[in-house]
Image (cartoon, rainbow, N blue to C red; front, side):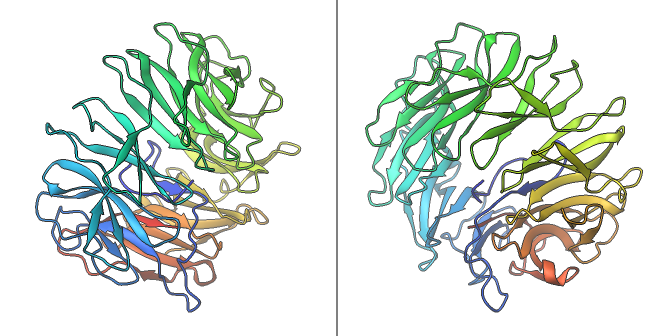
Length: 475
């Protein structure tokens, strides 16, 4: 997952941790931080703007009430930041680029929109560094479509999706790692029938990635294979009342069923593709309707799945928070496997299906794990839990070599304080996190090195009264 970080809501179970982020340039040789951008109402309460950790200064042109920056991302070469803001006109959200070497002066990337409340809503960087694909109702108010803009030609965009039927909209999209294709969900051909499409960036050729759907069927989610060869998606493709898992290989695939046979009433809920593109881990009430468990299927052997979790206590379920390790060798998941409503951390190794509790001896009644991120070298995980004191959510590390032996990373927090999210740096040496650590009234940005657990450094500048760091981006 790229560390494009901004405006999303946190998962239902708790706090969000980004996994496998590329943080090249974050830590310098002397242990300082050099390439982190964060969003905060640092200068004016409720006005969210972008700031650089290295310079300590604002990046975007200064915004006045009620304007604000929404989503943002660092470019791969660390030279600039792409962001959405109502910078030029209040409540009209457009796409901008600002060079980190020239803060305060930005270039508008999105094309001029027809008046009438049109907005840029989302964007993805082209991995080759040439430009951006963005979602906007640019041509027709209320009709969301995809556009590509190159950094070399700001303001000149090309529509990426196919022609939409009346009432149609693009709902979700992503760009393949090789920058060759854009895949998106849309009711492009039939209003309210959401299907999956691919556009080849170089030619503009557009195609559907599965057979035609009848009314009542739709694709509900998708993820690209990291090797850019295809896509895995959930849909009620076979039966309108059952959501299953499918794969399409680019260049002729039509949507092959991946998940195993489901119990009557069962559905696939969500899934993760392994970094090596070889398998998918998915959550479903596959064996018993209403009991959510975790399964793995090799894409070379579709519909042949293996359960990843252990036996569940009555009322127990695997939560929506689970991650495949960067080496594609195991999955780490959160479940109330041993005690109903007591969420703990487990790891299952794919080879031999060996399962190990990572935290269960350390978590007491009323204390839970709320989020988890793998360490890039696959040595262990970092997680958020109220492990020391119920209601106080702190940051911990556990190594796979020593399960159930955790280390608290942040300085001890006062009662009721919360770590809200964290990113493990790509050198597997430190964690950046947001928390109301210093003051209960202010969420700030911190870094802690694994070698100095319990000692953190504040990365953001001084916040105005009422100010908070709401998001950050690293690459």
